[in-house]
Amino acid sequence: MIFADRLDAGRRLAARLEHLRGEPVVVLGLPRGGVPVAFEVARSLAAPLDVIVVRKLGVPFQPELGMGAVGEDGVRIVNDEIVSMAGVSEPELAAVEARERAELERRARRFRGDLPRTALAGRTAVIVDDGIATGATARAACQVARKRGARRVVLAVPVGPAGWTARIGPDADECIALDTPEPFWAIGQFYADFSQTSDDEVVGCLARAAERATAAVVAPSRVPDDPRSRDEEVEVHAGPVRLGGRLTVPERATGIVIFAHGSGSSRHSPRNRYVATVLNRAGLATLLFDLLTTAEEHDRANVFDVGLLAGRLVDATRWLRTQPAGRVLPIGYFGASTGAAAALWAATEPGTDVAAIVSRGGRPDLAAPRLGAVTAPTLLVVGGWDDVVLELNRQAQVQLRCESRLAVVPDATHLFEEPGTLRAAAELARDWFTSHLPARPGPAG
Image 1 (cartoon, rainbow, N blue to C red):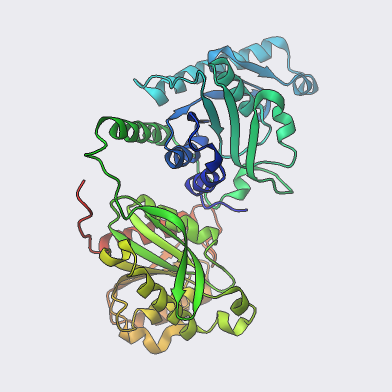
Image 2 (cartoon, one colour):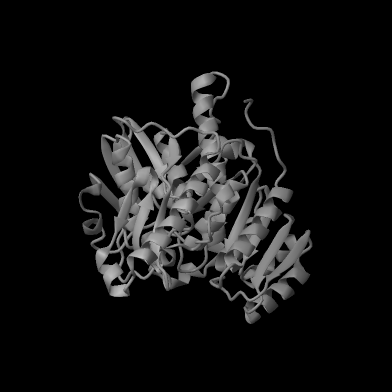
């Protein structure tokens, strides 16, 4: 299982934690990477969000190797086996602990600011991280929650190694992981985007959660939810077939982007999911859907039938126009590989009324007969090392009569797998859509 980023992981983890809805839950993120995941869980469960600050005790000459952890309220865990194996002396251990406790206190002040710690007495503490490796910091967090009076402790992560619950032992009453893949080398290998979470992002998550809680309690009648807001699996009607999809509409959305994936991919594509998350953060709704049924995918000719794929995209656009968000929001297309050809083709069909198009690593040459009829502003994003496709896009841009731009992402190959290249492509798409999808007023707040 690959997650687009921490927000995607949080949303998927929240669905697994639905059985906790209705309990007196407090969601506790482990800074820094666990907080964006916890934010989505808290939002889904309508629960308060706080942090438990824990610091790993790294072996002096190999800091990435944890020999224990320290947490708030004086919690301390030491792995005697690793300490002995590494030959760490008591003074060395004490020095590492003193340094990490000072950093722990600094971060606790930085993250919470003037916000008080959320009371845990008699409540269910749901401790969330972006993944489990050794488990030392998670154990320390569980012990902190116990010490603060939590009635029940649930430890929940998107991913962990096989057998990880044995490392936690009795410190948690319930342990949940969406996936325990093998081999397991590092948490980051299961994320398309595992960029470092900053202190400011942690503070921002806590502030937004506090504002949401205050609004719900102080003035619920004056801060209504956007009635169009949703994040759910949908069934897209495309002629006689029904196609699985994921529709995400953030509050006060200003536009909506339909994704057309490339050959051999689906709505679960981690690359497209990552791009969708970047667009969601910018206030854009997204629809990811399967262009073909499972049976149709077995015939490889369908995968490259641009006319068929474009027809499905047109049908999906018409279906979306029947949904609350689709009735009022301007629509854009995001296509990858062969999906980009389908997007360009579909945009020329009567009634689609597409306001902007982005192609990532696209094959616009497959839509050559329609290129001259495209009227929507079009951005072509290509990797600098994707030589053949780059030349195809250069030739296609000459045929376009609409506003267009060719953006080359340096050091990127066709799938944008190199560090930072997918983010660059996603940000280019975000900027194109936010500047070319004409904003329309949302419902009154």
